[in-house]
Image (cartoon, rainbow, N blue to C red; front, side):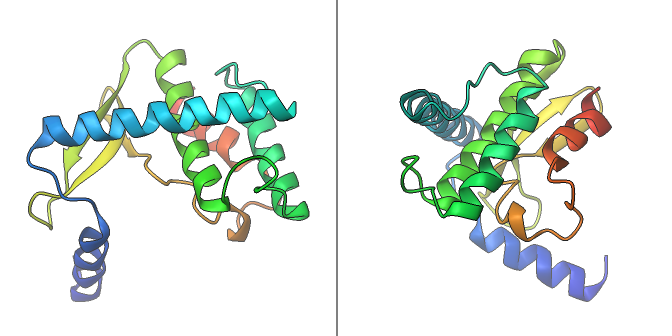
Length: 159
């Protein structure tokens, strides 16, 4: 790793939440996931925005909703801040992976460059992917012209 990469990793690690151990981190992340998914389900049902059925195809619908909300500034009307909705999308993505792949699971892993810092992962076999806040500022990513990157990412790694 280059010096620049190492400094970036250290800076990223400083932003991560500190925990006593992996079990405490996992409890926190799972509770956060459940809370965000519950809010997504309730608010989307109340507003008639999206039916979160946790199918792979639903990732397309969720991303379409996200870009619709970005275009209209409608996050507040949907009961979210933009960052909170993006975090909920990340957790929904992880839940779709786990529900549609029998050998996948959620887990907290220690961050190697910062003591007592942890990240939230979905793992399947030898593949592990950090998912907490994975889709922050998705609307600003230049490689998402077709606005279906969440679905494509699922198919690239988990199909």
